[in-house]
Structure formats: C-alpha cells, structure tokens
Length: 248
Image (cartoon, rainbow, N blue to C red; front, side):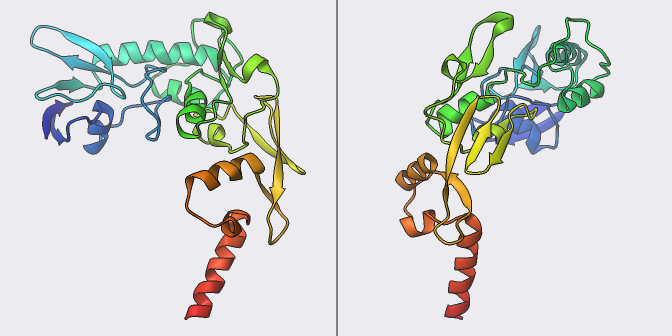
C-alpha cells in the first residue's frame, strides 16, 4: 500500500492508483473533462492538474495520469493550482463558448468571459470519442485530423464512415454533448460524423434496435446464443421474466 497526503489528509491506496482516484477516495473533488474510468488516461484537457510538493520545489501534474508514490504531498486547491486551472478553463471556454457544461465549469472558477478569440464549437478536442472507438470498441471509425486551430475529430476525409457500427459509445462519453445520435426510420444518424448506419429488426417485435455490424462484433465477444442477441433489450427482459415465471 502507498501512503500520501492530499490537502492535509492522509491517504492509503494501492500501488498504481492515480492521484485523481486517491483524491476521490477521501472525498476530494478534482474536475475532469477528458477522463473516463474505462479508458486509459490521456491528459488532454489539463483541467485535473494538482500541485506536487517536494522539499524545496513544487510542480503541476495531471492527476488522472500520475500514479501515487510513497510520502507524496499533493495540493488540489492551492493558489498555483487554481491559477493554472483557470487559464486552462478559459481557453476551453473560448473554444466552446456556448457549451452549458463548460459555462458551468467556468462559472465555478469565476470566469465570465474569456480573453481569447471566441469560437462557437461544442467539441473541446478531449479525445474521448476517438479513444473509446479505438480502445474499447476496436473499430477506429473516427480520429483526429489537421493541426493547430484546425484540429478536429472526424471520420477519414470527413466522409461517411464505412467502419462505424452505430454503437453510440462516442455519444455516451462526450463531456459536452457535441455528438448527437438520432434514430431516423431504419437508420441511426450521426451528424458530426456525416454517417448513417442501417439498423436491423428484432426477431420478436420487429423494432429496429442495432446495426448488423454491431451485432456481429458482440457475437464474437460474448458467449450468448444468436437467439438472444437477435432480439432487442426489451424483448430480452420480457423473455427472462416469462422464463422465470414458468419455472416458479
């Protein structure tokens, strides 16, 4: 076990724990935008920075990616941390000036209006959508393109993706709701990716509930019969209830 101090609180956690998770263990809140527990830390947004103190010096580190060490002394609300965090949030607010999530975070840190050029973006380039598609779904239907101020998350050549399975994982992890998934008849549409994915019918109720590509990937990863996977979640629940009732 590793012992450290966070905001004058003694903490004991397992080796390999991030500073962020160690802080959460003792009820200390550290803001994050690009962090998700199911994805490898990326340190993209820099909002989770904290101050690591040594005897004669201190340094700002990202708490999501830095692992704990014995006798670490961490400050999460020092003047140095708040000042740096405010600057990062101000940059993000300038990019996503109309995002309710970013506006709320900025207000929490006393930022009303950024000093930088304002953009009307919702995407803050946190990379969560790109990484969940690559690391968890193993499809890599989207990625980053261009550089500098022109950098964006998109499908290859900003065209209809041929590999997107329509799972919606990118929608679920996006911290600013920049990605919208809409069901339209037989299709699921992702406006941001300029992508339309066809859905298949449930074998029991005929409702469209998943894409064929998504079902095929699930069938390769889980040990369930096709009869179960070819029906929608609602019908699965009903089937389970009927089976349990018949047994009792």
